[in-house]
Length: 257
Length: 290
Ligand SMILES: Nc1ncnc2c1ncn2[C@@H]1O[C@H](COP(=O)(O)OP(=O)(O)OP(=O)(O)O)[C@@H](O)[C@H]1O
Ligand SMILES: [Mg+2]
Image (cartoon, rainbow over all chains, first blue to last red; front, side):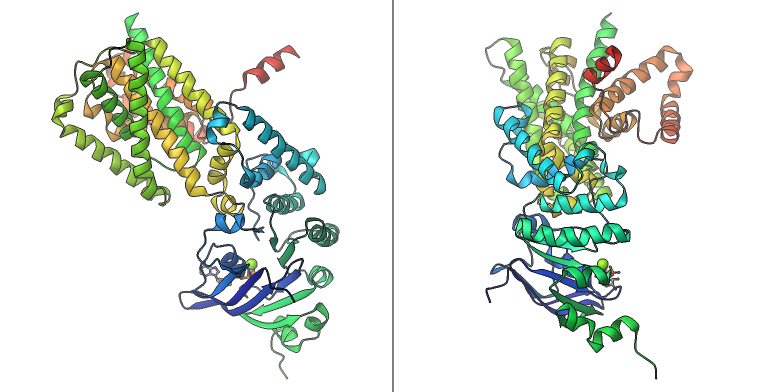
């Protein structure tokens, strides 16, 4: 097998006395579709926060294509090709839908601040291109007819979709989704399952997702990591995970007999 | 007549100050309380140029060079202050910038070449109403054009959600600094214009109360709105004069009346007069036509 694009090597995250993530080993390969599951407070979001540079691991190393990114700032990690969504949606609420996307196209910026002040030709062509690309992306997410809405005025399910679109607009090679189906109705969740697989193939990216909706996880993920109290308790295909006694125990609590 | 011209000119200076502070506080969401410091730097460097080494060229050219010197000096100060301070958040940034502006004022008080505590006199009258308002237009165009491009949107994204902005690859520190340096630069220009129109400047004219008043202007107009900053600057420049016309007693209660008006505004319209909106001339005209 080829080398992983992302390798979390024995990463640990301590908050004071609390060990939120305990020596986790995790690999993501090209075109992977991997899930992380676990009960509330298991440390899933903390893993994302370490990978994206919001927290620096207390121990261990995060390797992105042979490069240690432990102490990189979040914007730099995004520029290196890891992009994410948040458990509690973080859109630019008072900006329009299209501006949310255009902002994420910022990395391909080809003109200087001065060009925008004097409205130079390079400014105009670059902005035109940025807008066209944003509209293409919005079409994929069926949001193009709402492009001028303020993000906060979208219904919940569409806000989730917009956040995924914004993450993709940065042109990532690895997309992290933190509970993308949270708050969606069964219909929207079904659509999302299909969309996730499709996005992976269309954009040729790897996806790592956290989800509580077991139907969705078992359906779309090819491999699953199970965390409990910060520790990895199982790793395998959906079939293996469903029948793993440790996993069943973690979810149902210790059986009393 | 001269009184009216003087008031109009002051409005122009405060419009530049408010629009530039709005870039830092309203657009980038960074709570700076040091604007009077940058204003002072621009005023004193601009004045020093005009008194000690004006060039043998027409006054209006000297005026532009002087405004450039004032603006660039204030920008450089903005870089030096911004690099350490913009890593601080909220209240800490406010306190650090406030401290900086008071330090600037104390430095000036102790500099005898520029008059120290007696003030700086004999500054040539290079600026008039026309030149001031030319700079008002330059400032507004510069900042509103900046805001319509990707750099401007990146600045706004910091105010909206800093973590989200970083997550899509925006170097938030760089854009905070950009807003801070451009904002302080224009405060410096306002300072030079102020010196060239008043012909006399005094360190107490730049104490921290002025930073607070400029802040009140943009809160009144609506944080994040350039139109709001302009209106806020005009209202708070004219209000004390209006109160003065209403008589001695009312004038003495000026600060109390200010505070009451502000409290009322905050209860009635906490987002300020304009919110984050801009006055859009073409939209206004278009609506009238249809
Ligand atoms: N910044 C922080 N400071 C202190 N404790 C934290 C911090 N962030 C997370 N924790 C703690 O770490 C543990 C793991 O939290 P985390 O958010 O990663 O869980 P999770 O698996 O994402 O849970 P959920 O399914 O509820 O989202 C929790 O006990 C949480 O309280
Ligand atoms: Mg979580």
